[in-house]
Image 1 (cartoon, helix red, strand yellow):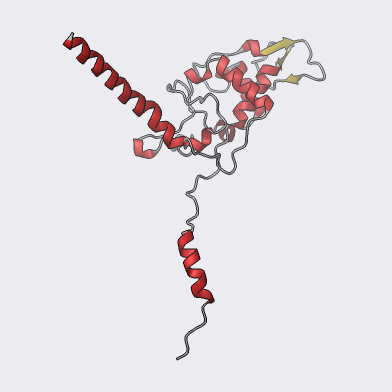
Image 2 (image 1 turned 90 degrees about the horizontal axis):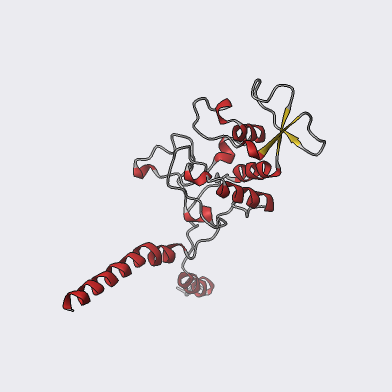
Length: 216
């Protein structure tokens, strides 16, 4: 019986420590975070594209969290942008930090590759844009037709990629996904707040400034 009590107590203490370290302390650290200047909410189309990003499992191969050089990371040299901070993810629910880098980090892909044509073509056939890429193609996000309708978006592909005599048209899901990728622009600077004079110093300085000089 005594051993069972010790085992139960040890398990509860271990659980409490884990919850404190992994849940409570991180929550205390970020609960007051505000969105940085320059970060805007996602549009409806971008949110639909984000849902498509999740549904297609993009976060299993791509992260969205460039690391600092203090972690001996070469992310900045790779052109992935500055290290991320909590405020960058203010509008992200759920967060898509990712843990694998089978492909490059996409934190700033909207800055590195803003071209809609490139993004659409890369989704249709990655190896036409990045030779040797192991990224899967997503043909179900497109439609191959004899001719695009007036309200449809034809994908401008490199020579030899589109089926001969036919055109590739982007479905709405592909267009929304590209809009989401283009919105990943965390290029605004992250600066510390401007130093402000303590309120006590202000109130004490004000009467002194108004006090007339003493006669000599």
